[in-house]
Length: 142
Ligand code: DQA
Image: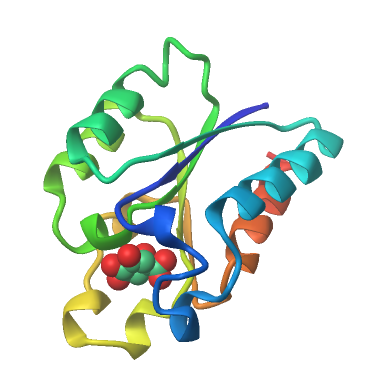
């Protein structure tokens, strides 16, 4: 199956950004590993990271034409702010899994509301980068 992984703002800084919360691995390492492991499960993993909301929205708009079957998304700070991204996901009606590296429920109060969780297939939060691997693992059987 064709999977689109979307990473939101500041996740390009993985490895140097608040390593006590987000760990020491870079986004590039994560994507390389995830792609390799996905291939073995017959999952073709496409990836986009952007700090710009409209770029993510447009990528979601074209996901249908790009034959994307499933989306894994870490909306990062847009989790707590972006009704526009939420609406884009509803508009494409492609099922998605929401992933967070940290546990959004054990941090500042403003992080405990997500505009995505109620419309997602499921949410993985607080398992570090492992969360992305579990999402991929789930998709091998859908
Ligand atoms: C995050 C959690 C968000 O609250 C934060 O704004 C992020 C990353 C996570 O993966 O833990 O940028 O989505």
